[in-house]
Length: 450
Ligand code: ATP
Image 1 (cartoon, rainbow, N blue to C red):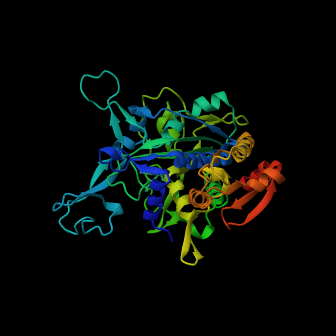
Image 2 (cartoon, helix red, strand yellow):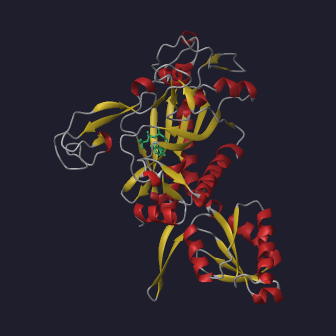
Image 3 (cartoon, helix red, strand yellow):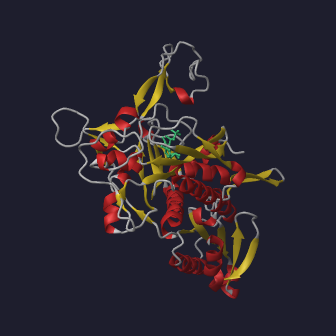
């Protein structure tokens, strides 16, 4: 099994992900995505959006502001309780999140047992927005997309009418002042989430929770190409203040199974917390009294005329963690015999950062280059994604590089191609080669990428 260090090394060498601000010594929990990293991220986002929005009739998209009004986080409960238990080592000064320590009695860094008792550590990043006299927190960078979806419930419902159940999704950045960022892009201070809030009639929440669990697990298997045995559900031992039920989808990372997505039954906590006129509704969750909201976040049943606060089933995935799991699952060191080996990323075609590489066999031979450019132009018209022209003349090196990037096929043009109009397609996974007529290459690539 590949280690996280294998993935880190490949990411850096092949411009997927770099440590952030490296020229000034870096910064914990900050990473930058390079040319192939952004392609893979984009492909994961698109796969998620396709499944959650385009293949359904009942889900709408949203993109809300990241810098958010403080009141949101007051009524969501984040200001008072979005915290992790911080423990400090009195000997070496290390600061740790107690629930993630290897042994709660000993410092992770130096092994000392001289630790402070845990204290709640606020994880939201406060901001001072506008021309304030002093640096005074009057806004927050959002720590999740969910709450900015709840406060847009009425806007979406009024503009695109839906009957319950219906959902709203967002993909976007979230910020958390994590005590100890770790595991490469597994735990960062700035990351990206893809979240669905699915609004349902009270009483239908448990059935919907079970259905979304099924739907999300099958997405991981069919779209991310991860075998079922490397994924599992784990129910939360301790429920968050808003949750009626919560389970994580976990992937088997090198150090064991860990969370990549959460599925939560949030009952009527969220719309109930942010709605105006709370007393008009039979809100079941314990919500803070809200006299500052200007909008009723209720739903009127068109048949009975009854107004009520919908329940919410949430699916919350991290795009960066998804990318890490997908890369880890796809990473293979293959023994080719005779002391030779290759590294290959066996990514599903749709996720591959580069869809095909077109390689003239000899460097700077005008006829070969012209043919190659013609194929590149035809393939780009398909709109499948990035198509690369490789004009280095070193075919072995090109194959190795594209195996590592995960490019599903390389297309080689040789002198014979100029005579018979055929090229060689070399397949990433089994390294098999076939001759294909140039005019058939686009169709062939389409069938490989699907
Ligand atoms: P954890 O227990 O690991 O801190 P969480 O349960 O707080 O995560 P959620 O609030 O449910 O996470 O967020 C949904 C998803 O967002 C997670 O499943 C994960 O994929 C991603 N995520 C959460 N925190 C981070 C982070 N600090 N860095 C990268 N991804 C994250």
